[in-house]
Length: 154
Image (cartoon, rainbow, N blue to C red; front, side, top):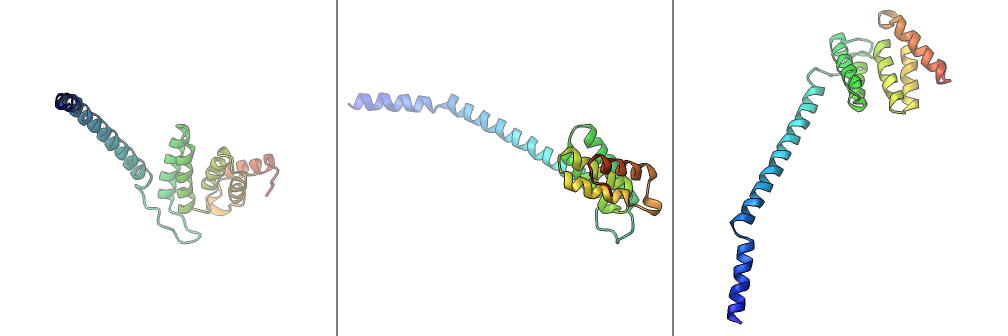
């Protein structure tokens, strides 16, 4: 009986010996490396979306620099097929310049692309109604065409 206990103890200790501990340590290091990589990717996404000031502007005013940067980044994300991230950038562009027909049109197109018809129509209407220096004629025309296509004329 004592011999059997010693043999079982030896088997158990051998199973948890250096090779098993080393394998566990390697697995832990691999998992830590994966976690570190994911943290870097999250940080890159967060900083990629916020390296310009998106503080609210006065109603009726435009921060054209922020709008242009957000629009460019939104276009890059749309071209890459990342509609969700593009939506955030286009929302930033509209926040920076809510009277811009082009900013409203980009946001409307993105909402339509993700299947949110009511939000798309709301922003197409804002683009179609733009006046003054922010009323890019091409964007206004495209917004009106989209409203007609969707059966929601302004």
